[in-house]
Image (cartoon, rainbow, N blue to C red; front, side, top):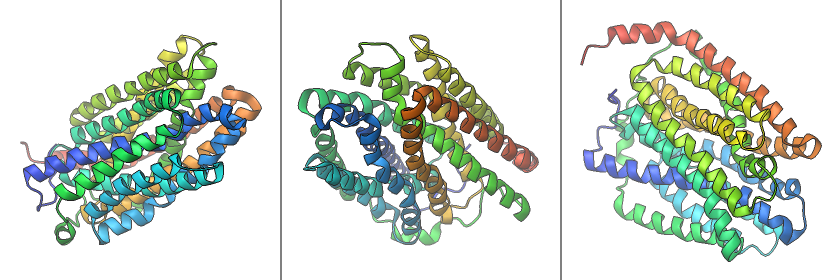
Length: 409
């Protein structure tokens, strides 16, 4: 489906360039936020602290990743989306280098917090820019999701390799230099967009009556909380899940490699979901993929050894596939002029629970291992199913009427 609400001021070349930078930024965003969960395994020997104790240092970073999405979205809509993205690249670069140079754990935690502040910019700002620039929303969001997934997948493997060969500081320093370089190139190639703000559409693609819109928003909050918890618990804990449950004697590099291979399954799922959204009603796809995510997490919870790989592949495919559908559905009910703020609320809720995810992992792992962690995650995933099925039931009539009213192409 072509995007009838694309920003008028963007020509084809600028659209392609913008989408290219946004896809790269999505990969960077997830990569930098998942450096520490792999580095922490190597830090256990350096500082003589437990996994749970060291992982807690990242709590403020993940909290900032959610909280600061709100001002980022507001500033993007009222100031400049392009300038906010430049700040994303440069701020992440400086924060990563600060983490690499940290003389102690306190300064490392401060640098990680700063990283969370700047990394928070991407999702509300980048997603709004992506939807505006897209001419085929399903495929564009799917490709963007794949790029984010590749960032997640590469984070575990590259971080483990850098830590094992050059030391844990290099795992922050090398990506930091890369972010600074990309930020400088972005500023040179992308034009200022402040004059385009007044041209953004104020009409949503699908209009909901006030009562239905209020209920749908409430269900979306449930979806964002539960999806965010499942996403962050599984992705943050994935290297350690593989380390503990796959089998004895596996090296850190092997853990990172297996985790990266599993996360690439999400890329395949996101390509598939992008195609599915072109053929089937998105609200039904939403409920279906939420159900698959729940079943995948349950499967992981009851499996160990070599069978764990297949279970994790299914779970990761659903976890990352739902992100594409989530953003696609939200975009249908929001106008471009305030879309960055809506995505800011979405990612504020989703990523604020990242801090809760770290706390859940550390609390449950110290008491019942990953049996307890995964059992609780399955219950949370069931809440996601309830939210998506509720949304599908409420909007089905409006979506059906919209398809009937839409002229044939």
